Image (tube, rainbow, N blue to C red):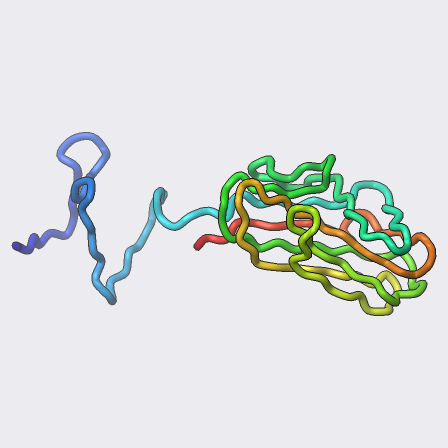
Length: 183
């Protein structure tokens, strides 16, 4: 094995330079730095799909004693068309590990006993649940890191046991969001 000492490599013709051949391993020794002053492709990954959905223009009524899907019916961002505003469900088109989070806020302080927000996988499996605190316009949130396949469906549900209907606040008070982690 020989050593080539140069300060710069340029392609003989055109604008592409290839180092190595298919199947070769190119090793960058420990302590070296790769500086990118141009456009990189093929390194790392992307945080897609990613989405943010909120409740548009009106509060949602949540019945007492029912575990109800929160109707986040307005896509703010949906990079890969994976969020369904008619079923309020995120279904990734790429299998992987995801960070997901959701939140709601009530529009009153009435009876916070037995109130929780939960994240559900495929409609029935509770991934994580959180209980609310007793404050005016109190916001409850839930978040998780979870491995998903392309057939998994994620929703946010809320339960309240106050004995009467309660309303969630719309707009920036509540959201459902997530993105694929680079692993």
